[in-house]
Amino acid sequence: MAGGRRVLGRRFGWLWAAYAVSAYGTGFGFGAFPIVAVLVLHSGPAQVAALAAAGRLVGALVAVPLGPWVEFRRKRPVMVAMDLVRCGALLSVPAAYAFGALGFAQLLAVAVVVAAADIAFKAASGAFLKALVPPEHLLVANGRFESTTWSATLVGPPLGGAAIGMFGPVTTIAADAASYLLSALGIRAVGGSEPPPARAATRLRAADLLDGWRHILGHPVLRPLFFNVVAVNALIMAPDPLLAVLLLGHLGFAPWQYGLAFAAPCVGGLVGSRLAHRLAARHGHRKVLLVSGVLRACWPIGLAFARPGVPGILLIAFVQLGLVTCCGVFNPLLATYRLTHTPPTLVARTLSAWSVSTSTSIAAATALWGLLATLTTPRTAIATAGILILTTPFLLPRHEPTPDTSPEKPHPAPLPG
Image 1 (cartoon, one colour):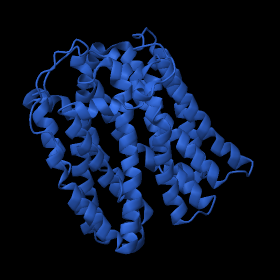
Image 2 (image 1 turned 90 degrees about the vertical axis):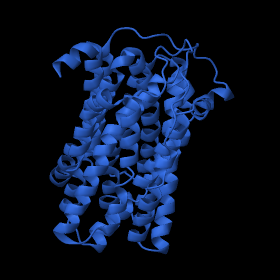
Image 3 (image 1 turned 135 degrees about the vertical axis):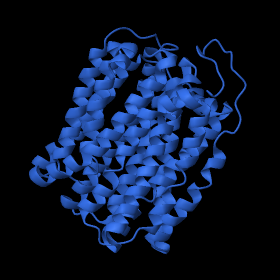
Image 4 (image 1 turned 135 degrees about the horizontal axis):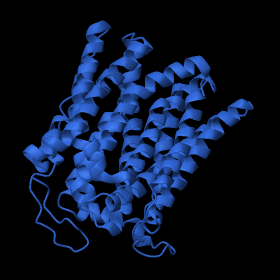
């Protein structure tokens, strides 16, 4: 760890610290909006589903012009601004609650603002990381971020649930807002300079909105990876609300059992992300990326076989452990490949296009699977997603691309291997 810090440098250390504090804030506030909607506003299932789907979908659409907007500005000020936007939006919820003025429309508006700011922040942070960290150390850096995400997911939700029980329903939203403020301070502390943007921040051209998708769809390996990731994420996330209905309603799981079954396996994501660099060094990036991409599709079908009691809890935990371990290996390899094979002048637009597509597909799939569960049963809908996800490995790239010697790419290479 100490050697890694020396290699990546003090500036990366501040960036990682800023990411960690916001990740733990997000984990602490996980599920806070649905809880507030149910406990404070007495919303029904349809409203809670709309809050999740519409917030993500509208936020993604709002974020479409933000990709080029981010591209042509210095990235660190954008990251600070997006942290402050998220902080302010989230703080409006406990403020309105304190004055008895909180309504569903405000929750939905805040969800949209936070979703759009998330996409803009990720686009800026990816471009900033590419400029900050040497190409040969990008996988180590992305592995650090991935392991932090999983550790925050492991620790945050149980603590957040306890905090809500002790201090009230908006407690974790306030804490999440504070984490973004601390993140903004950490990013400011990164210091140093960064390369100027590709061009001056003038009026956006219509072509700028589509350049990210053009790069993805025109790249021989990014294109299949893009379709694979969009499909896998949608098919994993769409049945998530239905799992809550099946396990908490039909199978009688206690809330703590449900939380434990999904939180404890996050250890696998932490382990997988720490192993990604070592596995790639031993077996080659290409091979590990493809193998982990195939393996992560094999697990979700097991969720359809959940049963009541301890055997059901153990099955869910086992399936989730396998899934998140494979994701923990795959995700930093994907992030590294995506940055390495995107010109510096297109990074923000490419990452924004990727995030917008993923969020939109998840929102659409969530609505579609809700309808399927209504027409059939939650278990049938979960099984359908599990069967469909078994086909997604066919979308993974099976051939190495021709090496690209463009001067804009400092490390031209085929898919590493």
